[in-house]
Image (cartoon, rainbow, N blue to C red):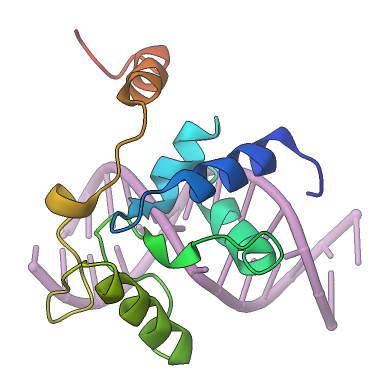
Length: 120
DNA sequence: ACCCTGACTTGGC
DNA sequence: GGCCAAGCCAGGG
């Protein structure tokens, strides 16, 4: 990847996630311009989170659940979020209605319109 | 270059 | 609502 604009956007977006909020991989990918790039987002976090000091723990899957498989990293993510005031359900899920970060809704709507999925 | 894997998502059963 | 299969994009062997 290196200097792909998509990667740049993803990094920028991740850095802008407010404390105490979460966002899904797909949403990040969509904001960055590639709605299909959810998996790429995970790779970016996996490889760049430390280098760029990205708040990777604020990224969860579309169900509001921690995406990583059970393990130490998962515990860390949960602890990080709880420390920011995010409450978890039993199954490591958060309430997206409360914690989902909606950055510049206009952009998202614009994306939807381009895809012709919204009837305003 | 091919194949497998992954911190994803959506749609069908 | 949970499990399975198929799409999707990139990196690594």
